Image 1: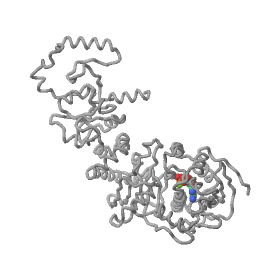
Image 2: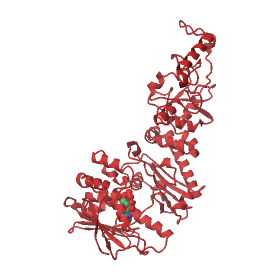
Image 3: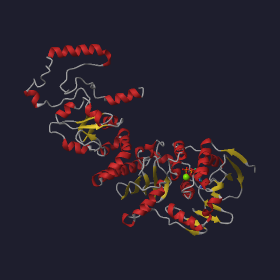
Length: 550
Ligand code: ADP
Ligand code: MG
């Protein structure tokens, strides 16, 4: 069959192509980074595949990326010997978008609110080719021996064609017919500079007209003293598909209990905060420099999905399958070791570089809270990293639970916290009156999920975490109250019987809306307050449940 079929792009693809072709004129050179990174992914996948499965097509082809330019024809060609694509994959991968968050990214890109540099993070990097090319031709042959090759072609104007092709080697070759205003990308010197700038850590040789341009190296296997800061940053940009500098980095090497080399980065920006969908995990799993799993979902807990980098363990079997990875107790062990080490690194950062930790906490603290709620195993380490305002801190300043413990009164048994929309609301409310009077510190939780976090944490270094709106809190009696019971003059206090009558009358009026009305010693300036009958839910948790209709 030699027929050429024409197909429409999915609506989202049409939209991105429209933006890419008509409104992006700066930083166009990143298209090359995106295409090289796709080739590198395809080569990694082939390398891994060939370890687990024998008899792929063209087993003797070297794993490499070749780039060729033709100034006269105004073309740029990128060829890899990677895993390739069959017909269905060409259609699915180059004609549709599945990635969550892409739509939001698209609309922000259209409004000029986002950087085209981020295109790769949203699973649409391939389409960047249309920034410089009037026509893109992709010839590809899958590693599966029985699959024939195909040619996919498009000018980006709404549809593409696809046709069978014979005699293709394994892998993918992409020819860009450069637009008139993009001829610079047929200049070998320009291309060489772009590769050096963006793709120097690609772990396969990249050659330009037969000359190798990059130095292939696995940075995480070198010792720290041999690595310059700029190299780390470059590597971060490569693994994280990022354009900024990392906020934090952790490079470590251990032999016990397992042989692990890890190089992890916290990015500067938390994209989930911008409503751009859920961040995909960004750490790749290697065994002795061979990629086992890209963007692994199992090697670290889900709440560490904001990390970028590499974990390499020679204890892993090279030919482990996806399924086996998920079930592997070894993977679970690596997960625990690396997570603990990373939490320790955060603690050290908090101690040695408080401003950086504060920045981290403001942007990424929410992931740590998620960790407390979802991951029992690391609660203790995570508890030390929490930061809150409190009745002792200045507005806008934060304290750790550890520091709170250091300030606790001798007779104080528990750690107290109270939720409110903001500091003013909390301090104007009735709940902290009794604590203030007794000079007991109260933590202010102002994030709606904080009470769930405190509830899950339950205790810290042996001290219970108690919400200040609980009805059954026993506070030490005030010395002055014992001495001068008539202090509240000129208003006269109710006697026991009057108070009981008043409470009964209020219960009568409020009916089912309250469980009980009681006299209390906890009020100072306010006439009454609502407290919780039990330790199960705090008022703010109830508010959240009510708002969500449960
Ligand atoms: P992403 O790389 O984030 O998945 P892209 O738009 O860059 O998004 O690429 C889309 C998909 O097309 C890739 O996931 C991959 O499956 C496929 N693809 C692109 N280039 C190649 C290539 N050179 N070899 C094999 N598959 C490729
Ligand atoms: Mg890509």
